[in-house]
Structures are given as structure tokens and as C-alpha cells.
Length: 262
Image 1 (cartoon, rainbow, N blue to C red):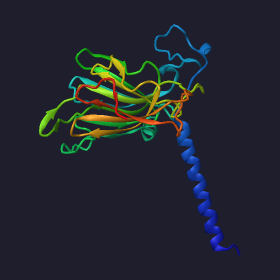
Image 2: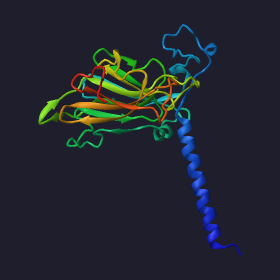
Image 3: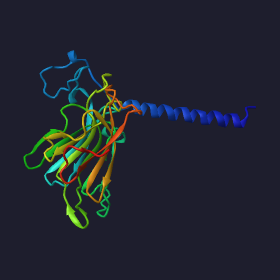
Image 4: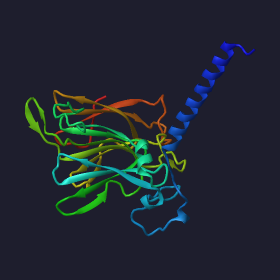
């Protein structure tokens, strides 16, 4: 007769291996393979040009997940995700991101930062912008990227010290370039941090390009954001744990190129 303890041990080991396999698959899913340059049309302005080649939004199967309501009345956003199972949006919805906002209708909900709601990305390839007044739309990025965090004006009126606060811009942390030249865009590349105006047409890099963003912190007294970023000291296009982390800051009243704090 097989020992009951042996059976239990085998069962637990099997569960562990299955769990590890799922985690590895999930990590491996979130990347963009860059196709050889010869496979794409060179005249398309939306092409992503890199050392390894080009890729466009049309070359990747995607789906729109939701319309994001912003605090700018005539400006709406759409989250665009990489499809996992073709065009079945019901299945794809389980493969998308999650947000930190007022979806539950609780107007007393405290925002992560006053006047700003957040969408955390997983296989979030782009953000589409639509102007209800002009009935025109555009993408934040002209090529597929991996958006990690989208900060946008909160739909519900917020305040600082009982004074109304309204934001008129978007902030995005993103992997948007194959910085380590491995023909993939994934979390091994340098993570950038951008500011977009309300139309999403004017983009500005807030953290120097030779850094990779690690995390952020909010200063409620001064309405500032601190951004921790790792310097690509050896210029190999990826984050190395032994490389130094510096701290930058900028005002959320009018975000501009961040200043070095440490």
C-alpha cells in the first residue's frame, strides 16, 4: 500500500510545479517581438524604427478594453491591449490591467494622488485619445509599447486642503524602446516616464533617457511627485541591480523636466 504521506507530498509538489509554470508563462507573455525590417513597409510614419527592425499596431492582434472617463469633459481615453485568444473580448478582459479610480461610484474615495486616477498596465500596448468636440482621435504612441502606469485627470472632482484641484495632463511610465537590443520590448528594457498635454499630441520625457524608472512617491505638502530611477551606468540598455538609484522630483501643478534631488 502506498504511504499516505508520500501521496500528499507528490500532490503538493505537482501543485507547486504547475504554479511555477503558470507564473513563468505570464511573465513571458508580456513582451513585443520586433519583426525584421524587410517584413514591413518602410514608408509608414507609424513604424517603430529600431536597430532590430520595425513593428506597427496593425501587426499585433489587439482589442479595446474600456473607455476611460477623465476629468477633462471632452477628452476620453481607450485602453488597447494585446489579444491573448484572438478577438474574444470576454476572454481578453481577464488578461488586462486594473485601475485605481472611482469605478464603484464612491465619490469619497481618496485618490492615490489628488486629482489623478491611475491605470496599472499588463499587456497594455497603447492608449487611444478621443476628443468629443472635434470628433478626432489619435494614439499616445505611434508604435506598440508596454504601458506600466497611466496617470490621468480624475473623473470625480478632487481637492487639496478643501480647494478644488483639476489636472489637465497625462503621465505615463512605459517600456517604449528595445534599449538592450534583444529584438523585444519588455521589462528588461529601460522604463521611461513621459508627460502628455490634454490633447495627448505633445509628449515630453520627464526623466533623462539614460535612467529606468523604478517607483514613485507623492509629497502631499508640496504637491510633488518623487521618481526613483536607476542609472544605466554601463550603458547596456537594461537595469542592473548594482547600478545606482537616483531620486528626481517635479511639481504636479505643472509637470516639467524633473530635477535631481539625490
